[in-house]
Image 1 (tube, rainbow, N blue to C red):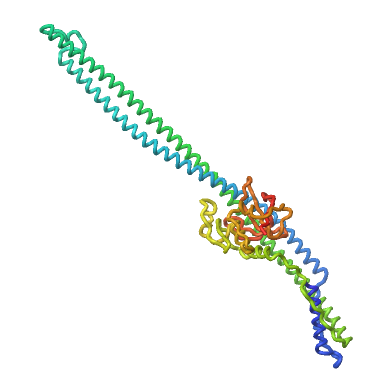
Image 2 (tube, helix red, strand yellow; image 1 turned 120 degrees about the vertical axis):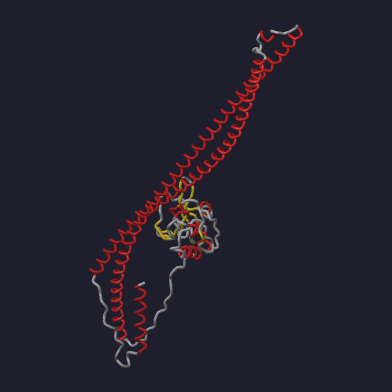
Length: 433
Protein backbone atom coordinates (compact mmCIF):
# COMPACT_ATOMS: atom_id res chain seq x y z
CA UNK A 1 0.00 0.00 0.00
CA UNK A 2 2.83 2.42 0.82
CA UNK A 3 4.61 1.82 -2.50
CA UNK A 4 1.35 2.39 -4.40
CA UNK A 5 0.74 5.66 -2.56
CA UNK A 6 4.26 6.76 -3.23
CA UNK A 7 3.95 6.01 -6.96
CA UNK A 8 0.67 7.88 -7.23
CA UNK A 9 2.10 10.79 -5.32
CA UNK A 10 5.12 10.98 -7.64
CA UNK A 11 2.85 10.97 -10.68
CA UNK A 12 0.76 13.71 -9.14
CA UNK A 13 3.81 15.88 -8.60
CA UNK A 14 4.99 15.38 -12.20
CA UNK A 15 1.56 16.17 -13.64
CA UNK A 16 1.21 19.26 -11.48
CA UNK A 17 4.62 20.52 -12.44
CA UNK A 18 3.87 20.07 -16.13
CA UNK A 19 0.50 21.75 -15.78
CA UNK A 20 1.88 24.98 -14.34
CA UNK A 21 4.67 25.05 -16.99
CA UNK A 22 8.30 25.16 -16.16
CA UNK A 23 10.11 26.20 -19.31
CA UNK A 24 8.51 29.64 -19.76
CA UNK A 25 9.45 31.12 -16.42
CA UNK A 26 12.42 29.07 -15.37
CA UNK A 27 10.87 28.60 -11.94
CA UNK A 28 9.01 25.55 -10.55
CA UNK A 29 6.62 24.69 -7.78
CA UNK A 30 8.86 24.09 -4.75
CA UNK A 31 8.56 20.81 -2.77
CA UNK A 32 7.94 21.52 0.99
CA UNK A 33 10.68 21.01 3.56
CA UNK A 34 11.53 17.39 4.40
CA UNK A 35 9.42 15.62 7.10
CA UNK A 36 10.98 13.87 10.14
CA UNK A 37 13.06 10.82 9.26
CA UNK A 38 13.21 8.29 12.17
CA UNK A 39 16.45 6.37 12.51
CA UNK A 40 16.85 2.67 11.88
CA UNK A 41 17.56 2.19 15.58
CA UNK A 42 14.22 3.77 16.51
CA UNK A 43 12.41 1.55 14.02
CA UNK A 44 14.18 -1.58 15.28
CA UNK A 45 13.41 -0.76 18.93
CA UNK A 46 9.74 -0.25 18.12
CA UNK A 47 9.58 -3.55 16.26
CA UNK A 48 11.27 -5.38 19.15
CA UNK A 49 8.72 -3.96 21.60
CA UNK A 50 5.87 -5.01 19.32
CA UNK A 51 7.30 -8.51 18.98
CA UNK A 52 7.62 -8.85 22.76
CA UNK A 53 4.03 -7.77 23.27
CA UNK A 54 2.88 -10.04 20.47
CA UNK A 55 4.62 -13.02 22.07
CA UNK A 56 3.04 -12.31 25.44
CA UNK A 57 -0.38 -11.78 23.86
CA UNK A 58 -0.03 -15.01 21.93
CA UNK A 59 0.86 -16.97 25.07
CA UNK A 60 -2.12 -15.53 26.92
CA UNK A 61 -4.36 -16.26 23.93
CA UNK A 62 -3.26 -19.90 24.03
CA UNK A 63 -3.92 -20.12 27.77
CA UNK A 64 -7.31 -18.51 27.26
CA UNK A 65 -8.14 -20.94 24.47
CA UNK A 66 -7.22 -23.86 26.75
CA UNK A 67 -9.31 -22.42 29.58
CA UNK A 68 -12.27 -21.95 27.30
CA UNK A 69 -11.82 -25.48 25.94
CA UNK A 70 -12.06 -26.75 29.51
CA UNK A 71 -15.08 -24.51 29.94
CA UNK A 72 -16.79 -26.16 26.97
CA UNK A 73 -16.04 -29.58 28.48
CA UNK A 74 -17.45 -28.51 31.84
CA UNK A 75 -20.53 -27.18 30.09
CA UNK A 76 -21.07 -30.66 28.62
CA UNK A 77 -20.73 -32.16 32.10
CA UNK A 78 -23.24 -29.67 33.48
CA UNK A 79 -25.74 -30.63 30.79
CA UNK A 80 -25.27 -34.34 31.59
CA UNK A 81 -25.78 -33.70 35.32
CA UNK A 82 -28.84 -31.56 34.60
CA UNK A 83 -30.43 -34.44 32.72
CA UNK A 84 -29.54 -36.82 35.57
CA UNK A 85 -31.19 -34.47 38.07
CA UNK A 86 -34.29 -34.26 35.89
CA UNK A 87 -34.50 -38.07 35.79
CA UNK A 88 -34.12 -38.27 39.59
CA UNK A 89 -36.95 -35.76 40.05
CA UNK A 90 -39.21 -37.79 37.78
CA UNK A 91 -38.32 -40.99 39.66
CA UNK A 92 -39.08 -39.29 42.98
CA UNK A 93 -42.47 -38.13 41.74
CA UNK A 94 -43.30 -41.67 40.63
CA UNK A 95 -42.22 -43.06 44.02
CA UNK A 96 -44.36 -40.48 45.84
CA UNK A 97 -47.32 -41.42 43.65
CA UNK A 98 -46.74 -45.09 44.54
CA UNK A 99 -46.52 -44.15 48.22
CA UNK A 100 -49.80 -42.27 47.93
CA UNK A 101 -51.50 -45.29 46.43
CA UNK A 102 -50.02 -47.54 49.14
CA UNK A 103 -51.19 -45.10 51.80
CA UNK A 104 -54.70 -45.28 50.38
CA UNK A 105 -54.53 -49.08 50.32
CA UNK A 106 -53.21 -49.08 53.88
CA UNK A 107 -56.07 -46.90 55.04
CA UNK A 108 -58.49 -49.31 53.40
CA UNK A 109 -56.75 -52.26 55.07
CA UNK A 110 -56.91 -50.50 58.42
CA UNK A 111 -60.63 -50.00 57.92
CA UNK A 112 -61.01 -53.70 57.16
CA UNK A 113 -59.03 -54.51 60.29
CA UNK A 114 -61.36 -52.36 62.35
CA UNK A 115 -64.31 -54.26 60.88
CA UNK A 116 -62.61 -57.54 61.77
CA UNK A 117 -62.01 -56.30 65.32
CA UNK A 118 -65.69 -55.44 65.55
CA UNK A 119 -66.57 -58.95 64.47
CA UNK A 120 -64.29 -60.36 67.15
CA UNK A 121 -65.97 -58.23 69.79
CA UNK A 122 -69.39 -59.38 68.50
CA UNK A 123 -68.41 -63.06 68.67
CA UNK A 124 -67.03 -62.63 72.16
CA UNK A 125 -70.31 -61.03 73.20
CA UNK A 126 -72.24 -64.01 71.84
CA UNK A 127 -69.96 -66.39 73.70
CA UNK A 128 -70.47 -64.43 76.90
CA UNK A 129 -74.21 -64.73 76.39
CA UNK A 130 -73.97 -68.51 76.00
CA UNK A 131 -71.85 -68.75 79.13
CA UNK A 132 -74.26 -66.59 81.13
CA UNK A 133 -77.25 -68.58 79.93
CA UNK A 134 -75.57 -71.82 80.99
CA UNK A 135 -74.76 -70.36 84.39
CA UNK A 136 -78.37 -69.28 84.93
CA UNK A 137 -79.42 -72.87 84.27
CA UNK A 138 -77.29 -73.87 87.25
CA UNK A 139 -74.78 -75.93 85.29
CA UNK A 140 -71.84 -75.71 83.01
CA UNK A 141 -72.42 -76.35 79.39
CA UNK A 142 -71.95 -80.03 78.55
CA UNK A 143 -71.80 -81.14 82.23
CA UNK A 144 -73.91 -84.01 83.68
CA UNK A 145 -75.61 -81.62 86.12
CA UNK A 146 -77.53 -80.15 83.23
CA UNK A 147 -79.61 -83.36 83.19
CA UNK A 148 -80.26 -83.46 86.93
CA UNK A 149 -83.82 -82.66 88.11
CA UNK A 150 -85.56 -83.82 84.99
CA UNK A 151 -89.03 -84.96 85.94
CA UNK A 152 -89.29 -87.67 83.35
CA UNK A 153 -87.37 -89.16 80.40
CA UNK A 154 -89.11 -86.83 77.95
CA UNK A 155 -87.81 -83.71 79.74
CA UNK A 156 -84.36 -85.26 79.85
CA UNK A 157 -84.42 -85.71 76.05
CA UNK A 158 -85.55 -82.12 75.60
CA UNK A 159 -82.64 -80.95 77.76
CA UNK A 160 -80.22 -83.12 75.77
CA UNK A 161 -81.46 -81.64 72.48
CA UNK A 162 -81.13 -78.14 73.90
CA UNK A 163 -77.59 -78.77 75.17
CA UNK A 164 -76.57 -80.23 71.76
CA UNK A 165 -77.84 -77.09 70.04
CA UNK A 166 -76.02 -74.87 72.50
CA UNK A 167 -72.81 -76.85 72.04
CA UNK A 168 -73.02 -76.58 68.23
CA UNK A 169 -73.64 -72.86 68.46
CA UNK A 170 -70.76 -72.47 70.87
CA UNK A 171 -68.46 -74.29 68.51
CA UNK A 172 -69.63 -72.03 65.64
CA UNK A 173 -68.98 -68.97 67.79
CA UNK A 174 -65.49 -70.13 68.65
CA UNK A 175 -64.71 -70.93 65.00
CA UNK A 176 -66.00 -67.54 63.82
CA UNK A 177 -63.98 -65.84 66.53
CA UNK A 178 -60.77 -67.57 65.40
CA UNK A 179 -61.41 -66.70 61.75
CA UNK A 180 -62.03 -63.05 62.62
CA UNK A 181 -58.83 -62.95 64.68
CA UNK A 182 -56.73 -64.44 61.86
CA UNK A 183 -58.30 -62.07 59.33
CA UNK A 184 -57.43 -59.07 61.48
CA UNK A 185 -53.82 -60.23 61.90
CA UNK A 186 -53.49 -60.67 58.10
CA UNK A 187 -54.96 -57.24 57.43
CA UNK A 188 -52.58 -55.59 59.89
CA UNK A 189 -49.59 -57.44 58.35
CA UNK A 190 -50.53 -56.45 54.79
CA UNK A 191 -50.96 -52.84 55.87
CA UNK A 192 -47.53 -52.65 57.48
CA UNK A 193 -45.80 -54.41 54.59
CA UNK A 194 -47.35 -52.15 51.92
CA UNK A 195 -46.47 -48.99 53.83
CA UNK A 196 -42.91 -50.12 54.58
CA UNK A 197 -42.22 -51.00 50.93
CA UNK A 198 -43.67 -47.74 49.60
CA UNK A 199 -41.79 -45.67 52.17
CA UNK A 200 -38.51 -47.44 51.35
CA UNK A 201 -38.95 -46.69 47.64
CA UNK A 202 -39.81 -43.06 48.36
CA UNK A 203 -36.77 -42.57 50.60
CA UNK A 204 -34.46 -44.20 48.02
CA UNK A 205 -35.84 -41.96 45.27
CA UNK A 206 -35.47 -38.87 47.47
CA UNK A 207 -31.84 -39.76 48.24
CA UNK A 208 -31.16 -40.28 44.52
CA UNK A 209 -32.72 -36.89 43.76
CA UNK A 210 -30.62 -35.16 46.42
CA UNK A 211 -27.45 -36.82 45.09
CA UNK A 212 -28.26 -35.87 41.49
CA UNK A 213 -29.00 -32.26 42.41
CA UNK A 214 -25.78 -32.08 44.44
CA UNK A 215 -23.84 -33.37 41.43
CA UNK A 216 -25.57 -30.79 39.24
CA UNK A 217 -24.66 -27.96 41.62
CA UNK A 218 -21.06 -29.19 41.84
CA UNK A 219 -20.83 -29.17 38.05
CA UNK A 220 -22.35 -25.69 37.86
CA UNK A 221 -19.91 -24.43 40.54
CA UNK A 222 -16.94 -25.93 38.69
CA UNK A 223 -18.10 -24.23 35.51
CA UNK A 224 -18.55 -20.91 37.34
CA UNK A 225 -14.99 -21.14 38.69
CA UNK A 226 -13.72 -21.85 35.19
CA UNK A 227 -15.68 -18.84 33.88
CA UNK A 228 -13.95 -16.65 36.50
CA UNK A 229 -10.56 -17.99 35.48
CA UNK A 230 -11.34 -17.46 31.80
CA UNK A 231 -12.51 -13.91 32.50
CA UNK A 232 -9.26 -13.18 34.36
CA UNK A 233 -7.22 -14.50 31.45
CA UNK A 234 -9.39 -12.47 29.08
CA UNK A 235 -8.66 -9.31 31.05
CA UNK A 236 -4.92 -10.06 31.09
CA UNK A 237 -4.94 -10.77 27.37
CA UNK A 238 -6.88 -7.57 26.64
CA UNK A 239 -4.36 -5.57 28.66
CA UNK A 240 -1.40 -7.06 26.78
CA UNK A 241 -3.30 -6.69 23.51
CA UNK A 242 -3.68 -2.98 24.29
CA UNK A 243 0.10 -2.77 24.83
CA UNK A 244 0.63 -4.62 21.56
CA UNK A 245 -1.71 -2.29 19.70
CA UNK A 246 0.10 0.71 21.18
CA UNK A 247 3.50 -0.70 20.20
CA UNK A 248 2.29 -1.50 16.71
CA UNK A 249 0.82 1.97 16.45
CA UNK A 250 4.17 3.49 17.39
CA UNK A 251 5.93 1.30 14.83
CA UNK A 252 3.33 2.21 12.23
CA UNK A 253 3.81 5.89 13.04
CA UNK A 254 7.58 5.62 12.64
CA UNK A 255 7.16 3.62 9.43
CA UNK A 256 4.71 6.23 8.15
CA UNK A 257 7.22 8.97 8.91
CA UNK A 258 9.92 7.02 7.10
CA UNK A 259 7.57 6.47 4.15
CA UNK A 260 6.66 10.18 4.10
CA UNK A 261 10.34 11.04 4.08
CA UNK A 262 11.00 8.62 1.22
CA UNK A 263 8.01 10.07 -0.62
CA UNK A 264 9.49 13.52 -0.08
CA UNK A 265 12.74 12.29 -1.57
CA UNK A 266 10.88 10.93 -4.58
CA UNK A 267 8.94 14.16 -4.94
CA UNK A 268 12.12 16.18 -4.73
CA UNK A 269 13.72 14.02 -7.39
CA UNK A 270 10.63 14.39 -9.56
CA UNK A 271 10.77 18.16 -9.16
CA UNK A 272 14.36 18.21 -10.23
CA UNK A 273 13.59 15.93 -13.17
CA UNK A 274 10.67 18.10 -14.27
CA UNK A 275 12.79 21.22 -13.99
CA UNK A 276 15.43 19.67 -16.24
CA UNK A 277 13.01 18.75 -18.97
CA UNK A 278 10.15 20.66 -20.55
CA UNK A 279 8.65 17.55 -22.07
CA UNK A 280 5.11 16.87 -20.88
CA UNK A 281 4.73 13.86 -18.69
CA UNK A 282 1.74 11.58 -19.17
CA UNK A 283 0.44 9.87 -16.10
CA UNK A 284 0.18 6.14 -16.60
CA UNK A 285 -3.17 4.50 -16.16
CA UNK A 286 -3.57 2.57 -12.96
CA UNK A 287 -6.04 -0.14 -12.10
CA UNK A 288 -6.91 -2.57 -9.35
CA UNK A 289 -5.42 -6.04 -9.36
CA UNK A 290 -7.11 -7.15 -6.12
CA UNK A 291 -8.70 -10.51 -6.71
CA UNK A 292 -12.34 -10.87 -5.83
CA UNK A 293 -13.40 -13.47 -3.29
CA UNK A 294 -16.40 -15.76 -3.31
CA UNK A 295 -19.47 -13.61 -2.89
CA UNK A 296 -21.44 -16.29 -1.06
CA UNK A 297 -18.67 -17.03 1.44
CA UNK A 298 -18.08 -13.36 2.14
CA UNK A 299 -21.81 -12.78 2.55
CA UNK A 300 -21.90 -15.52 5.20
CA UNK A 301 -18.80 -14.23 6.97
CA UNK A 302 -20.05 -10.64 6.84
CA UNK A 303 -23.40 -11.54 8.41
CA UNK A 304 -21.69 -13.51 11.19
CA UNK A 305 -19.19 -10.72 11.96
CA UNK A 306 -21.99 -8.14 11.95
CA UNK A 307 -23.26 -9.70 15.19
CA UNK A 308 -20.03 -9.36 17.20
CA UNK A 309 -20.88 -8.37 20.76
CA UNK A 310 -24.44 -9.71 20.56
CA UNK A 311 -25.37 -11.55 23.82
CA UNK A 312 -25.46 -15.33 23.94
CA UNK A 313 -29.05 -16.55 24.39
CA UNK A 314 -29.71 -20.29 24.46
CA UNK A 315 -32.20 -21.16 21.71
CA UNK A 316 -31.90 -17.64 20.22
CA UNK A 317 -31.42 -16.61 16.59
CA UNK A 318 -33.04 -17.31 13.23
CA UNK A 319 -32.55 -16.38 9.57
CA UNK A 320 -33.71 -12.79 10.24
CA UNK A 321 -31.44 -12.07 13.20
CA UNK A 322 -31.26 -12.39 16.99
CA UNK A 323 -34.32 -13.57 18.96
CA UNK A 324 -35.23 -14.06 22.59
CA UNK A 325 -33.73 -17.17 24.21
CA UNK A 326 -35.70 -20.03 25.78
CA UNK A 327 -35.62 -21.80 29.14
CA UNK A 328 -33.48 -24.90 29.66
CA UNK A 329 -34.25 -25.56 33.32
CA UNK A 330 -30.61 -25.18 34.33
CA UNK A 331 -27.50 -23.20 33.37
CA UNK A 332 -29.09 -21.04 30.67
CA UNK A 333 -31.88 -20.08 33.07
CA UNK A 334 -29.34 -19.15 35.76
CA UNK A 335 -27.87 -16.61 33.29
CA UNK A 336 -31.34 -15.33 32.31
CA UNK A 337 -30.97 -16.42 28.67
CA UNK A 338 -34.75 -16.63 28.35
CA UNK A 339 -34.94 -12.87 28.93
CA UNK A 340 -32.11 -11.96 26.52
CA UNK A 341 -32.21 -11.29 22.78
CA UNK A 342 -29.27 -12.86 20.99
CA UNK A 343 -27.87 -16.06 19.47
CA UNK A 344 -26.75 -19.48 20.53
CA UNK A 345 -24.07 -21.25 18.47
CA UNK A 346 -26.39 -22.90 15.93
CA UNK A 347 -28.66 -19.83 15.77
CA UNK A 348 -25.70 -17.71 14.65
CA UNK A 349 -24.97 -20.20 11.85
CA UNK A 350 -28.62 -20.04 10.71
CA UNK A 351 -28.41 -16.25 10.41
CA UNK A 352 -24.98 -16.26 8.72
CA UNK A 353 -25.78 -18.82 6.02
CA UNK A 354 -29.17 -17.29 5.31
CA UNK A 355 -27.14 -14.52 3.64
CA UNK A 356 -26.17 -17.07 0.96
CA UNK A 357 -29.64 -18.60 0.70
CA UNK A 358 -28.74 -21.71 2.76
CA UNK A 359 -31.36 -22.91 5.26
CA UNK A 360 -30.09 -24.70 8.38
CA UNK A 361 -31.84 -26.45 11.28
CA UNK A 362 -31.50 -25.01 14.77
CA UNK A 363 -29.44 -27.98 15.99
CA UNK A 364 -25.68 -28.31 15.62
CA UNK A 365 -25.95 -32.08 15.16
CA UNK A 366 -28.07 -31.64 12.03
CA UNK A 367 -25.92 -28.73 10.84
CA UNK A 368 -22.97 -31.14 10.84
CA UNK A 369 -24.83 -33.06 8.11
CA UNK A 370 -25.73 -30.01 6.00
CA UNK A 371 -22.85 -29.97 3.51
CA UNK A 372 -19.67 -31.53 2.21
CA UNK A 373 -17.37 -32.90 4.91
CA UNK A 374 -13.67 -32.12 4.62
CA UNK A 375 -10.83 -32.95 7.05
CA UNK A 376 -10.14 -30.17 9.54
CA UNK A 377 -6.64 -29.92 8.10
CA UNK A 378 -8.26 -28.74 4.81
CA UNK A 379 -10.77 -26.28 6.32
CA UNK A 380 -11.38 -23.02 4.42
CA UNK A 381 -12.93 -19.67 5.16
CA UNK A 382 -16.69 -20.11 5.43
CA UNK A 383 -16.59 -23.73 6.68
CA UNK A 384 -18.40 -24.76 9.85
CA UNK A 385 -16.36 -26.34 12.67
CA UNK A 386 -17.89 -28.62 15.31
CA UNK A 387 -16.99 -29.97 18.77
CA UNK A 388 -18.19 -33.21 20.26
CA UNK A 389 -18.18 -34.99 23.61
CA UNK A 390 -18.73 -38.74 23.82
CA UNK A 391 -19.77 -38.85 20.17
CA UNK A 392 -22.44 -36.12 20.55
CA UNK A 393 -21.91 -32.76 18.81
CA UNK A 394 -22.58 -29.83 21.16
CA UNK A 395 -21.02 -26.71 19.57
CA UNK A 396 -20.50 -25.09 16.15
CA UNK A 397 -18.49 -22.08 14.91
CA UNK A 398 -17.66 -20.44 11.54
CA UNK A 399 -14.04 -20.60 10.33
CA UNK A 400 -12.62 -17.25 9.18
CA UNK A 401 -9.14 -18.34 8.10
CA UNK A 402 -5.71 -17.75 9.67
CA UNK A 403 -6.64 -19.93 12.64
CA UNK A 404 -9.58 -17.72 13.64
CA UNK A 405 -13.30 -18.41 13.99
CA UNK A 406 -16.47 -16.52 14.95
CA UNK A 407 -18.82 -18.12 17.46
CA UNK A 408 -21.55 -17.66 20.07
CA UNK A 409 -19.68 -19.58 22.82
CA UNK A 410 -21.80 -20.11 25.97
CA UNK A 411 -24.26 -18.53 28.43
CA UNK A 412 -22.92 -15.31 29.91
CA UNK A 413 -20.75 -14.52 26.88
CA UNK A 414 -21.19 -12.66 23.59
CA UNK A 415 -20.59 -13.36 19.90
CA UNK A 416 -16.85 -13.05 19.33
CA UNK A 417 -13.84 -13.89 17.18
CA UNK A 418 -11.47 -16.41 18.82
CA UNK A 419 -8.59 -18.74 17.93
CA UNK A 420 -9.70 -22.18 16.79
CA UNK A 421 -9.82 -24.61 19.75
CA UNK A 422 -8.58 -28.04 18.77
CA UNK A 423 -9.46 -29.82 22.02
CA UNK A 424 -12.55 -31.94 21.39
CA UNK A 425 -12.90 -30.65 17.81
CA UNK A 426 -14.84 -32.84 15.36
CA UNK A 427 -12.36 -34.24 12.80
CA UNK A 428 -14.33 -32.88 9.84
CA UNK A 429 -15.33 -29.37 8.81
CA UNK A 430 -18.61 -28.94 6.91
CA UNK A 431 -18.82 -26.85 3.73
CA UNK A 432 -22.45 -25.98 2.88
CA UNK A 433 -21.49 -23.68 -0.05
